[in-house]
Length: 402
Image (cartoon, rainbow, N blue to C red; front, side, top):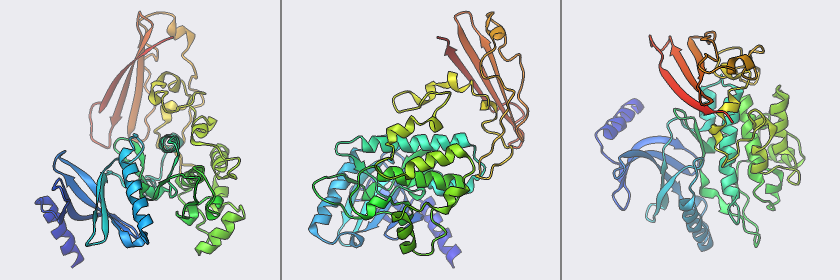
């Protein structure tokens, strides 16, 4: 019976039949459920003006509206969401209140790979460089929120509220519906998920650094696959451990000392906790000694990145560490371009050498120095499993030496 209903829903979507339209007639909602929580259901929808799929979020008003002040606060937060424009923040398009059904509906961008928690559980063999990239993107989004005046606090940051476009490597912070502008004039309500809440949240006297604490818990979940404080059976147990400063047991399962130290920096007391900007400059997230802060042109530092001795195996299917990272470091790879290779113009920098196969994937990088001092690189990737007889990807890059 359930299968028949699912098929009927899928058929309705295929035929373009909507279950509901927004007041303007621009957005049509299908019955396909993308996600569901205690008070919110997310449906697949379609934007007829842009010709693209979007997410239709439907929230029950009675879950958090108790008085006119709450309603006013909600409208203020919705207005705020519409103004947020950042590559690592979920795009918010429009919203409206369905008074008769006591729902608030808002349209956001749709993600191809679900939440970061789902994505990490699905792809368990992930290199540490991928985790670092996710961290940079999340911190970049937090820096944007926290840089507002007054700062915008998410208050419920967790891997379930971070979304992924896996085909583009994009990670974005979402579910900002409970976020609010930090106001010093009055205390705000205690909201969030106990496992990810900083100790000071329970006292209702906190600032934007509570998001950094939650971020640390997200990193911990990314590298251990464990929900923080999963050893506890009840929220009150979590509460007692958090306020007493007891860290989750998962932290002590992290074998990589740099990863563990980075997480501990996020989970320390509020007075010692680093900001999003400071964490982006942390050695753990640097490439070749250079920080990838917003505004630096994150991926323009390829010249330095290529000098990493482990670059060639960044996507290896090699051995898996206890924290779920794949790691195959070639200790013999050169850390700098050899002097002999750069003396004369027109010679092959890599002498036509191809890297050893990484599972069924063969990656080769070839380079040539030109007369004007530039370097041309060709990246060749061949995937035998995918059935490609020739390279599936050629990339030509030109790097100017300074």
